[in-house]
Every structure is written in C-alpha cells, then in structure tokens.
Length: 123
Figure: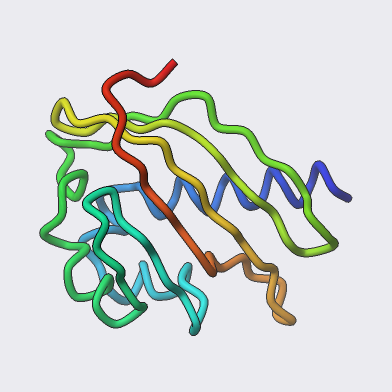
C-alpha cells in the first residue's frame, strides 16, 4: 500500500505540473487541499486562493516553458500521507521542491504543503 500511495502522489504532483492543468484553476483546484500553503522559490508565502489565481501566469504554465522534473522520490509518512522531493528547471531557473500530499476520504490526493528552494544546480 505504501508504494501505491507514493505512486499515486507522484502522479498527482506531475499532473499539477502539467501546463494544461496549471492554466485551469478548476483543474488545479482539484489537486489542492483546502488548507494548502506554499513557500515559493522566491520566498513568497501562498495560500490556496492566491496560488490558484497566479498559477496560470507562472513559469511552467505553457508548453514552451514546461517544468522539467528530475530525481523525484517519495516516502509514505503514514497511511494516506506522502512526502515528495525532486528538482525542477523551468526557463533556466532551478529549484529543489518538496510537497506533502494527503489522500482524502474520497480517495483523491491533494497537496497540503509545497516548498521551493532556489539552487544553482540540481544534482
């Protein structure tokens, strides 16, 4: 079950990085927990409403500037709770990423917390 949870959380994270989802607040909202918070690569703190409003215009929201993902790993912290860590590059900007995903009572995975940390190289 732990591997299945990790696989499902990874699939949800990759879906959230898909440009077609990023430009659609209705699709993106399906993947965000009601209490979602993010500390972005810039250091800005986002809540659910503010990220849904900004996401369509952020880097990685077009097919030309698609987010490149590498080294994604996941770990089940508890049943229905998964931590993901990975590196991204979009438009030449690199960051380490960390997300905590929760499986809801409806079986859907939603991200509760996300953090981006700038880096010069993703090794």
